[in-house]
Image 1 (spheres, helix red, strand yellow):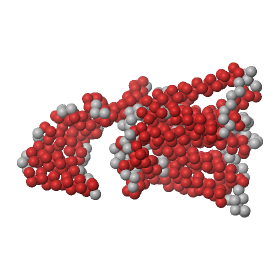
Image 2 (tube, rainbow, N blue to C red):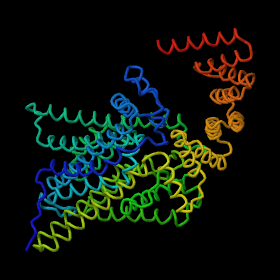
Image 3 (cartoon, helix red, strand yellow):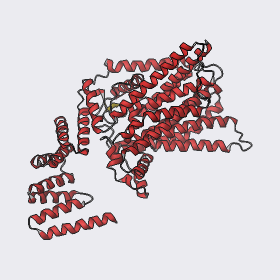
Image 4 (cartoon, rainbow, N blue to C red):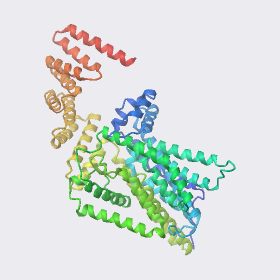
Length: 601
């Protein structure tokens, strides 16, 4: 007896199903707090996003402070603040909703790509063995569920600062779907009788969506190259000279835009010192690590365990670029590439998916080294669609074979149970990973656990992790814990002025003023041009009753602060009055009023 399993026959219903499951699984993220990794720069300590006005728009278009140029992402954070204020649940909800929409779009895109293949490749290529529309929908559903539920994507969704990832992907996916529709309409358009205007409008919408994607995150610069791959397969537009000419002309505006904005993105990285010139890595080592990352990402897709917020660059622990750690992945990349090329005449699908995967990852593979990480889960967010599509197609092909052989109820039930088990396992792993991103303490404690588990000796990663916990402790007013964690930071990096400053603030909050003044002095000796350090030490002196020293430090803070700060004048005025310099103290109080009135205006 056969088991008659039906899935919805409408691709939008199937896409909605995968999106709904994804939304439910990500609901725990709404309980998460901000984390102490860029969330201060993007949201909770960012004064700019609190005002949705012309000055903010100008700032968003010209700001490079985070090492990225992404004005639309800044606008999305400002809209969140306008609606939710500093409630992290609202900011998380926006990211979860966008990821849910992306899951819907990925499911629909998978169906459209398979449909395009079936319409345009009747002969010669055996990449798909899917003939029934039900199997096509099943392939799309599996692709969407893998995308929506895979724990590799938690970093992009549960980390508020990675809003740029889900946002650029949303417009990227919409643009791909629009492009497939454009090509479909182009084939039946009639420029002679005026039926060509709608196609031109469709082309313009593709370009505008691409533009929205690239101003959300520069990784969208790969979009024109992905369109060319689609033109080759599965859209089959390169068969004639006229077709090739049209394809090239269509893409000129896309490539020019991508080139210009690539330069803008690189300037942003340089401005924020994200390009790791101070940690030079030989070019050959960069190429070998790029190959390693390509394979490691695939392995994490297949077996997502021991995921880390920060993967230290392997070069710092193993600089021998010809060792097995690098050479085996590099050889694997060569073998995969060669196999795809050999199979090209029979199955274009493999080369198309592999090339898309490599191209989409290329900007962040580290050939131009950005930061000290070797790889990052967030980089796989959109590039993972290709490998997941392969799995979806494989699932649809299995269904075809089961139907063809009139399989019995037991075989059907086994297949359904296997798919259900994978969905449950992925959902469980994703929920656990969401809890890793619950707050700064859970995030960086997990990082330290993973570093110890892997016996890492990377000082940069430990320094970052202990600092992240320390800053989280400061937000939570856990000052004793903050002192312990910043002490670990100082043991690793004795020249970290920020760690001395934060530990000094923690000491001051606990009333241990001598220790606080010592830490502020150490910070000043490292960075003597930071006004806040003199203000902190001056305030600590005042609490000790050492008002003359307080006046000296606060005077120094005022002299180097830009713009001037009212609290500096306020504390100096109070200290001046304590030592009998009443007129000078009054002048400082008048300046406090002037600065406050200027802020109001």
